[in-house]
Amino acid sequence: MNAKSSNPDLLADQLAAEVAAVLRKREPTSEAWGIKLLEARLGYARIQMHVRGDMLNGHATLHGGIIFAFADSAFAYACNSANAIAVAAQASIIFLTPAREGETLIAEARELGSAGRSGSYAVHVSTADGRAVADFQGLSRVVGGPIVT
Amino acid sequence: MNAKSSNPDLLADQLAAEVAAVLRKREPTSEAWGIKLLEARLGYARIQMHVRGDMLNGHATLHGGIIFAFADSAFAYACNSANAIAVAAQASIIFLTPAREGETLIAEARELGSAGRSGSYAVHVSTADGRAVADFQGLSRVVGGPIVT
Amino acid sequence: MNAKSSNPDLLADQLAAEVAAVLRKREPTSEAWGIKLLEARLGYARIQMHVRGDMLNGHATLHGGIIFAFADSAFAYACNSANAIAVAAQASIIFLTPAREGETLIAEARELGSAGRSGSYAVHVSTADGRAVADFQGLSRVVGGPIVT
Amino acid sequence: MNAKSSNPDLLADQLAAEVAAVLRKREPTSEAWGIKLLEARLGYARIQMHVRGDMLNGHATLHGGIIFAFADSAFAYACNSANAIAVAAQASIIFLTPAREGETLIAEARELGSAGRSGSYAVHVSTADGRAVADFQGLSRVVGGPIVT
Image (cartoon, rainbow over all chains, first blue to last red; front, side):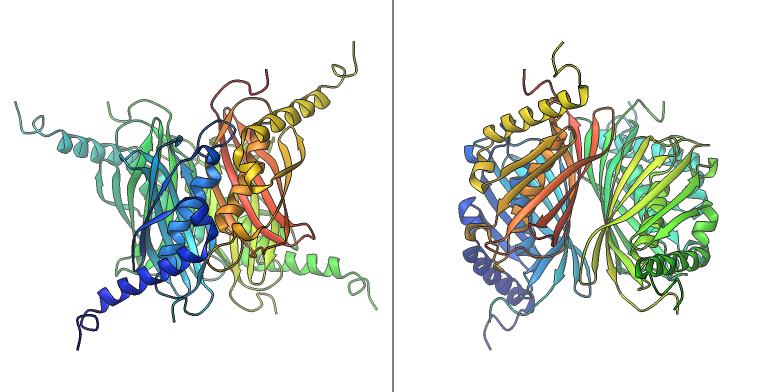
């Protein structure tokens, strides 16, 4: 008997980290946006991104679409973390402060609740020094089998 | 110097509780729905409601509008808790499981972030025995002066 | 061959009106809020409600929960209109102007799109004289069989 | 008196088209995603984008973040169309069907209502041949002066 099998929570978290790493590798968008996976556990993910000049909108602040995409990426790692393919059915985002070129953003996703194939998740987006940028809420639906076999 | 003035956090929480009590008394809806205020602190509120037969929809489960109204009430106590009149600019809700006649629901609201006059809040609605019913996210805007003078 | 069977659209609209009438009768909330069904067609519903004193919040304007519940009722008539039981999986609402005691509100729901068991709907809430009060967007999911047999 | 000044609606639409063109030019993201502005009028915009391989998520369908960003871009053209800087305060999106590499998407944004500095907008995203992909609803707030002087 090894250390792994003796702790089901730890096993679940290790699997979640593997799933996130696989998804991360498959997504050209994560590479393009420079998304760095900081932590992935069962029902949880934390990621990082630097705001670049090519991510700005017509008002010279970070494009709301990129803020959403960044939050959505954290959501995806969290809602796929049980190794069952899940997709977003819906998401809602509140924009609190604009983000500017050169800033580092953190998105932290966690599961709020679940029922059957559905799950609700919150993602908080902030700057590295703690300023609130956006709050995201997403509804996921499990639609398929394992990501890591 | 009394105990009150020596602890600013405690003072803020006492004011939040007073504000919630005033709002609660002013709202005929809270009375009609039998909403009970369990706890109110700065940026936080927890309330309770029993599902009655006159709250059901055409499918014999709790009307989604009442679930929302219940979550929205918790949101209102939390976003007015600093004693500045705040209103909802937007809200989003995910329905996870239906609630049935006779069940007791708990809504727990907490502030996620704020910037200027805007604030983002999450409200989790569950049954008293912990089943997730709905997750609500709201955007508040401060529009006026004090509630308690 | 009668007039009915010669026009499938008309038949669908007649069925939608029957479904709405059945749901309306089953809902004690609609009775309590005085909701009047003005029109129901396939993928569409329009309803009316008068703002009463017992519907106000602590700021003496119509409770956001009641505005949502009103919009949600129109959504329910529209998303059940094909005579297959559908429930709300998620909904989002933007509050534009407060509504006051004595005003008459109209909620108009229409289907935006659908895929499989899912449907997206918009509900516009306005006063009888055309002031925009709120915009609601909902995601429905078909979960069961016929409402009218 | 020239043709321009004789038609205020036409003038407003011409200004909206100029504003959209200016915003479009300022946004490196629009260039990066190959967004094409098809039409811009007061309170309305229609844009187009082709789904490329570098826009896919870990499940080989168009990243939800890109779908949102695309809808958000149409929203931005529509809510800035009166030549007053407006930003998104909140947005909500329902995902109906996945989009695949090689497909052409259309996003059509239109104003639903407004009050003071706030506006509500709907954006429907579909494929060029009419399949519903997503429905977006956004809340804008005017925060500044003219875009075109």
